[in-house]
Image 1 (tube, rainbow, N blue to C red):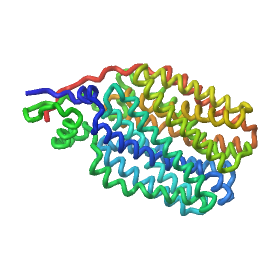
Image 2 (image 1 turned 180 degrees about the vertical axis):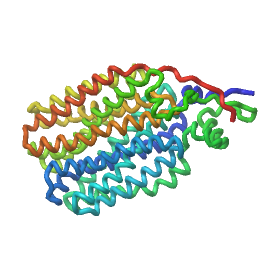
Image 3 (image 1 turned 90 degrees about the vertical axis):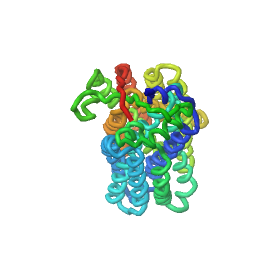
Image 4 (image 1 turned 60 degrees about the vertical axis):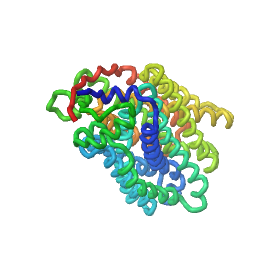
Length: 441
């Protein structure tokens, strides 16, 4: 009888076609998720003009999707433990594609907000599932890097939204970027067929054929012709629900600190993604130029997240994230300075690297902190609770915009959120080693 340590095989594996396939599907899903998040910020000046709404109302309209994302992160992160990640992700894609397209058909703020709320459930459900999936299957030496590359798709999706908006909104109206969101529905059958599910879920369902196929793809040198026993991550000996386990074995303080840091991180990300176009327009830039700043922000996020992922695989991921949050606050404060346009583009790229890019590595940190049997739940609650920051950001910045306070105060409020997140991250304790058990298959 041979014993196969599943996690050890994954940890010590070399990047191969199987890893590429997991990365490809995760990247593609997060890209369309990022597009759906970004289109509200891209279209908000045109929506305000078309519907005749104030900045405060527009802020609440943008927050409706984020409110849905809070529920989606918690609910879909937990339900994936029961139905598997492929089906959970497919449900999420259906929700945000259909209801985002439906929002484009609305001509009043109330039905628009309802459609965006429903879309938000799907958008929010993607991140905990996709983070847990990449964390589970990525080789240990490049785990943070693969997670960062995957999440760079989020920023690339935002770039696509800005480019599409820049090309077509003035000519065809803001609705066009919402209609385009319906296209990803066609991916659902392919995801169900070709994307591998979680190892623990396959073991739970006693899906021996799929387990063997995944194991052989991860390590082609394995000999499964002989009788074998799998060593899987042990579920902790407790009758408590998974959410209670987030606070057990010394995880309580760190769990709360993750919630605070991700809340403040999402405040920064969504304050910028929702209002940057309008803020730059208020500074005297045209719609096209304002959208160019959005593109610069997200290009910075792409390169920043990949660079941070590289650093996180070589140094302690905790201190990489702490440093990026702190730098994000500094760069946001520098946005209050009177700078030439070319330097402003460079600065906004650095802001993207240290806000969206840092948030992406924070997700990777969260995914690596929790053991596999509560990973989706842990990330789901962190991103779900964290959506409070995303919900508040468009509203708070919208109120400041509506009060016509100095533009600098907007960036200073966003920078303050980054400082709070930096302090919270410092209190996260290193994760204890997870016990292992032997499970026959």
